[in-house]
Length: 214
Image 1: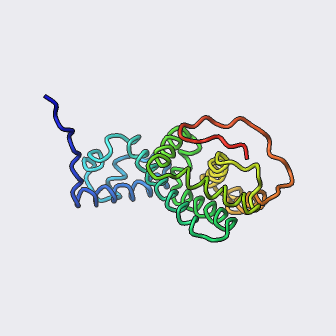
Image 2: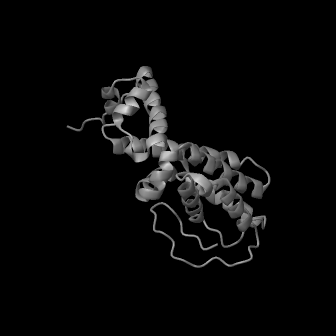
Image 3: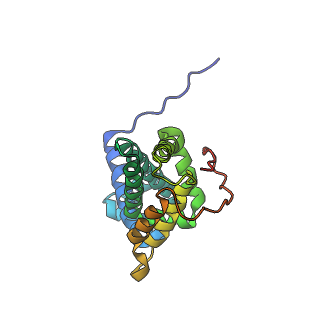
């Protein structure tokens, strides 16, 4: 006899609040201690028992994945907001600024982006499938190109390349951590027509993306 599929029960309000508190605490702990942050520290920061942390996130890996998913949800929101900007260049430039600021607020994920790119790549694909993240970015890119504001050889894969570069600086300290200066230099380099042709290097194979050549 066929049985109807089991429907996942919605999370209770108190459970949702606890989960949100754990994620907020985890962002703080991982920002302070990087990937060395401990689940006990997260529980203490969230003011919940460590058992509550493990009920929501059985492993540190699961917690980091949840942080990555939350990060890309905010990135997708920023990209959608950028589409509301009338000027195509300002829309594209504005997303790069907001997206890198979101990354800066999640310093631990900047380290994950640098040290565990496959984990961030998987979270990005989930955002592409569930939130149309890549499609929104492609729209921003195409609009800026059609307006002849963005150099024609820019491609979708250059966005994570840019974020990786900025994220690497966000995890450092001292005189070389002025990542916003680098961001401004990068933005100027992306303005059309671009004085130096970009090298035709292989595009990383990421499931869910469409390869672009400009």
